Image 1 (cartoon, rainbow, N blue to C red):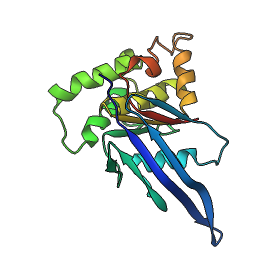
Image 2: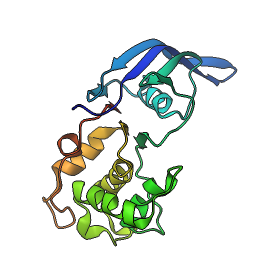
Image 3: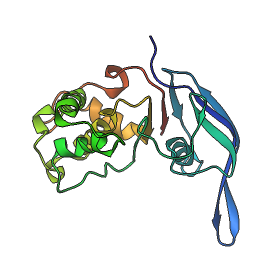
Length: 201
């Protein structure tokens, strides 16, 4: 059975005000993605890729048009839609494991350690950071920090995974095992369950 969520973007227009005028970013965009489908948004800097990702995450509201997931209109953030930012944004005072634990802790219904513990372990193993669970963010390479951020998103088992500038994460995973601070890991593109993953490159 294919898991994931159906995405429908209907006639979305978005603009930002700057210098006393509106700066158009998206103009009448319509896009659909079936459950289990991988969608990549490719274009030059400033073409609106990240803006569209933020609309799907519920962090912004379109000027015109609507965005739906499984038929429900997006009106704000939700744990079923996880966003991995361009910067790993790890909390420096928390270990890798504790940073990944932010995912379950941020949910409306916070699971106890007995429920969230195995999910955290699975997410760390998926990105190849099991042996670095007790490390601090300052001790990680850039690629490892990006994988920790990915594990933090995967731990909640989202139906939609939104990745901004995913090529940096793919590079970090493709280099796993090539040096001392990069343990073998599984590529998140193939090892996790099928889902709807619009990405910006």
